[in-house]
Length: 219
Image (cartoon, rainbow, N blue to C red; front, top):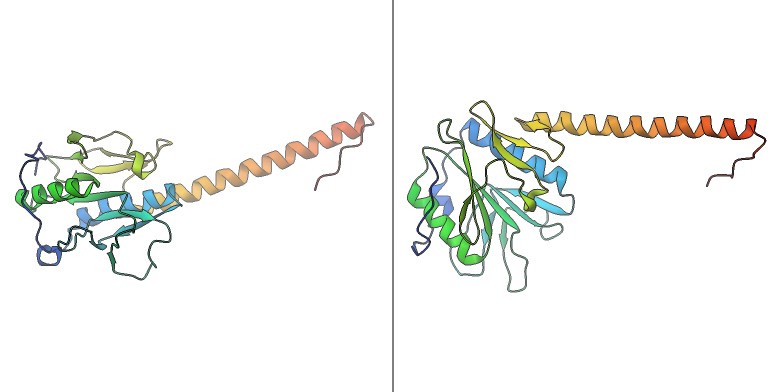
C-alpha cells in the first residue's frame, strides 16, 4: 500500500482495534521488533510498548499502536492497557506498521484520530514495492531516511527492498538480533576504552615517578 497524503478534513472514527486485529506477518513483526528494541536502547527514560491498548480522553474505543512511547513509570510492565486519566500523560509518539493487506480506510481513520488527539504518528509501509515512512503531525510528510527525534534520532530507511533501522552512529539493523549484537559491540568498545585509559594512567604514573614526581593519590 503506497502511503499518500490524506484528506485531513475527513472525520471518520476508528473502530475497536480488537475487531480489526489480524495475525502479524513475519515482516510486520520483524519491523515492529527492531523499531521498538532500538528505541528502547536509545531512550532509557521512556517506556516502549508494543500493541498496548490505549484508551484516550476522547471517550472513543481503544487504539493499539504497533509501537507507543510513554514516560517511564507511567505503567507497570505487566499491564495490557493504558486508560488515560484527565491528568495522565499522553503517548509521546505512535508507530503504525502498514502492509498491502491493510485497509486504506482504516489507516486514514487512524491518522485523523491521532491528529485530533495531538499525537505524532509515523506510518511505516513494509510492502517491497512501496517502502515508505509518513509522519502525521501538523500534516503528512514523507519521512523515510530522516532522523525521528521522538525515538532518539533513529532513522527508518529502505535497504535492498527491506525496511531497516539506522542508529545515530550509522549502524544498520535488520532485526532485533542485529541490535543485540550492536549493543554488545558498544559494550565491548566501552570496556576497551576504559582499559586503554587505565593503561595510559599507569604509563603516565611511571613516567612521573621516573622524574621524581609523586603522583597525587586517586580516590
